[in-house]
Image 1 (cartoon, rainbow, N blue to C red):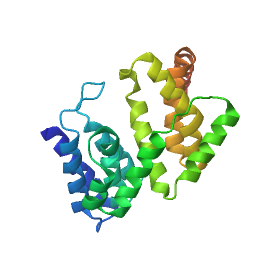
Image 2 (cartoon, rainbow, N blue to C red):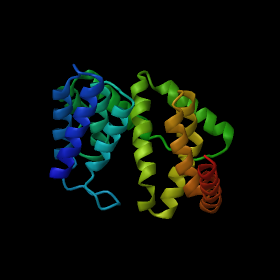
Image 3 (cartoon, rainbow, N blue to C red):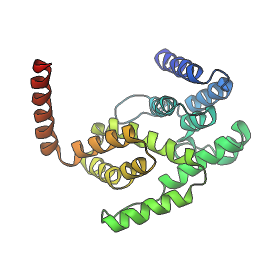
Image 4 (cartoon, rainbow, N blue to C red):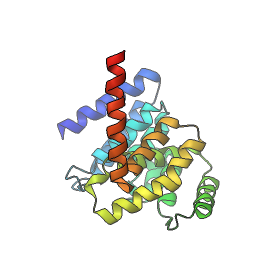
Length: 217
């Protein structure tokens, strides 16, 4: 859609802003390929699926990452969700992009079931040990962050499972990597879904405190 095209041009501007000699052609090719592969797919929100890889790429661009990583963000779901093979990604976009996409596909496929602290810690260690390119984790965190931002569109059981996994696994990983902004948003969104009443009460208190402070200032 024209709207998504505008969003993509904004993404290019953002990348150009911090990396004038970034390979924008790679990003264009990745966007077009992703658009073709996800054509006709719709998210639970009713939006075209392509919105998701675009948002993930945008989060990665906010982190000022390289074109290879952002291209992998645009392509991160094609191996899992379409008929595209890793070989095709390798052939069209090169070894680095394919390697990251495969890494994200691999860690997304591992089921995490226990919220016991020790198990969660083992799972986090295993996840980090499996990854030989930190960009795999960064794409996964961006993917999870956009999914958390749109979690309210999912049925409750899946929502709670994803929120729990975010709190146990992905929040702490973001924290360990020193990415406090992402960690904070992941944890806040997980809290909102797992304990909505406590979240609302806290939000109301913070809001009234803020008003009081503003008055004083």
